[in-house]
Image (cartoon, rainbow, N blue to C red):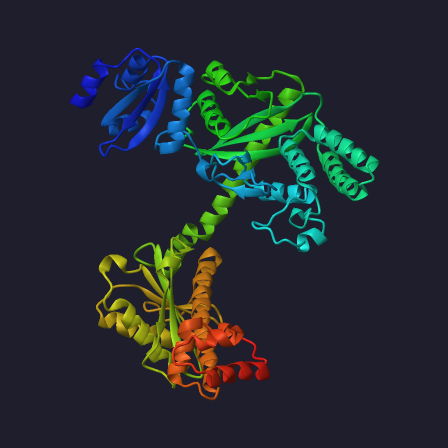
Length: 590
């Protein structure tokens, strides 16, 4: 504890408020609230016998702190929640990437749309969520039930969406603004879980339209009503529990998952999973309190009650702030809901951990296997693989792909145009050229742990010739495709890999081959397209280059108008007409 902190501790107020812990660089690493700031902040700098390992580690990094006084503890709670969302401090319990959770938004336009957004702004729109995995499914369902417009700009004519009954076409006056907004209101209630109220309103609107002999409008209301009823029939009836959110959570290894079941009018309307960071060492009561603060501060609460698996910290203050009742059911259907949410949270975490174990076996686990198979001095965390591609010696290219810890590192991929073998195929000479170009000027810290060559013993020896000439101590191996055998410098016989080590080598070899083929085809296509322009009378090298510079591709030149062609530097009317006539007669296909 430094002198600055000691002086500040003596002047702490006895008011409720928020405290912000900062490290040496002034970065906020923790935000907390207190009923009495003086007592709460001092606890961090007293004996650490009762502190968790996370708190002990945090206190060691605290260089300074500041406090913000509030009038009430509820105000402190709200301010704490806002500051956590703003700064996302290192040691606070956090919703994983909660700032990126998507919402469904009903826009505030004259004829509103429903869309997915990741930002909540004060623009008059109405937001629902946040969601995790189900947001696209919810949007697709809404678009089927409520055929609201999806286009950003009115076309003044019905589009395909109208003809397949996915839009009401307000752009073509197929529905009045008043009736359109009635359907928007129904969509809002539907998103809030009030399906029975939506059904009742639509039934009344349908009957009223039929009485007015507006059978087209009545049919639209009927179709929406039938879709909602069909959806409602699929929902599981719980009982008369009203509108509740049932929360369950689970801990496994270093992961914490919270799951919410949304029950509206006695039906399970959906569920969402949320992962929490920095929570594993905290108590159940604190984890749930922090989750509730962060999640429910993001969304409009449509439930009347939140069901919990245990008591939570600051329950009274949270209830006052959110204006909602919390309860821990001991029996009955409400307890069953919480147990169901908990079981699903446990299942979600188990499946997540299982997926990570499989992924680890295929990546870092495969790297460790490869080290044993090849008897390498170091773990090949960074590998670079080379492949040569050409067509009868023309457009010879090389690719280099990089893998880190068994995963593609695409930002470090490289492509090479081979200069030494143009017109005469020579894979060995090509390999020597690309290896020299790659490693002759590379810094030591950027060297890979293993170089992989796509090919047999000949390609391997070509690469080794350059590596030895550069006095580099990097293991080099080659993978022959025919029998999937690995040739190395240190073994007279090829090595036959197995398991994940083999799969990793195949992945990196196939990726290098794909990357090389893609580059080679691109060059060939460009050459072929440019040669087509050479066949047009009046188009020489300069005009061809100007055309490609102006339009970027032959496809765009083909679709250009005569006026657009005449705007190209050095172009005259006769040459422009020749271009149009050439492609018209040839019916040229890119």
